[in-house]
Length: 170
Image (cartoon, rainbow, N blue to C red; front, side, top):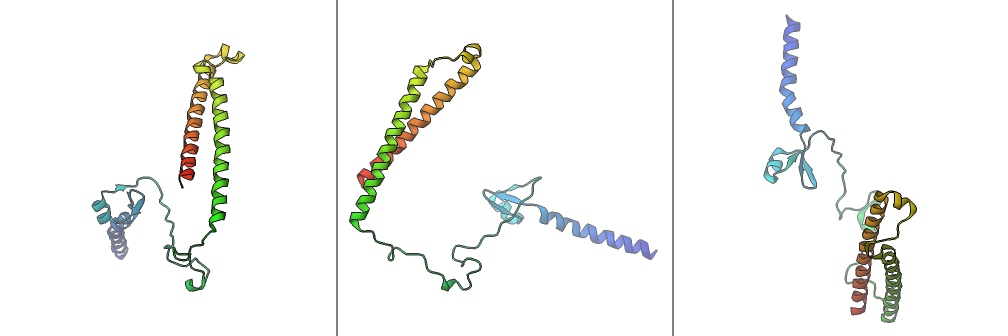
């Protein structure tokens, strides 16, 4: 009889703890944040994470000293706006000039590559190889690849031109 009472008490204790254990297992996703608090999840309209494991990576706040450095005051402070390093104006002009020269050379390379791609594309009718004559799918894939390459190259050129305009304007 004592064994039956002991087993029943043990079973009741497990049943009483089970909902608490299940509540702790429930994880909610709120955008890029995760929480196990049902109240916060309800307030933020979070979604329950089902069938996956969540790994928590603890990070230290930006104001905390790096681990293993002892006291935070011993490390050198980050430069503030008042302590920013001043560059000699002539040196800055030389750097800007070098940057413009590099951008100009990149622009020329990109324009040459675009010209070669457009020549190969041939207004949508590239020359077919022997394999492409037998298999039109290969030809269509090359045509799409050329279109994508041309669009990417035009985008690169536009980006380089924007950067050049930014350097020329300053």
